[in-house]
Image (cartoon, rainbow, N blue to C red):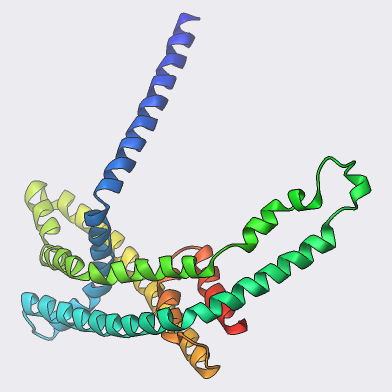
Length: 269
């Protein structure tokens, strides 16, 4: 009996300590997000750029030059993307207010029709609650601001581009030290163990790299296709929607929905 009670107390203590540890970890990640997020992005990009660097190295280019050349190409592409997005955002800020008014009008009309359709007769409510109160949530939803959502999304993209220099700095150190782990393993263990561990790490690295490269290519092709279709139908802010489609496609499930929802909403206004 006592042993069962002590075991139960131990489980409770472990659970509470785990909760405290998770809360502490969350607080640390939140405080250090200005560094953690660029570092995570740099690790992500290192898997994408590794094949490019290997391509140059196989053609006799020294490793450090291959890294610098690859980072230079990455920086130029990011700078070009930043210029295009910045120009589109300025145009978006000037043109969107007219779409906001149309959006509010359509949404209000939709919810007014919905309330009129489903509002119960007064005699069924016994005078205790009106249909307006019953559908207060629908009225609240009708006040949803599309501009706030899009502005927040574009703000996140802008912050991402502004932090890209820090990402490149992290990326430089990661790529320069990418072969150091295997060398340290060889020196720390015997030859057989170090070979096994190196093979396992190399296999894990290749699988992660294949997934990230494939996901990036799919997102890029989706973004190019989306932008082309929007330009074909002369939908405004096509470049912005293309960039957001590329970024949101990395978010499982809901990302693709958001990427389609925003340009379609603008197209029908």
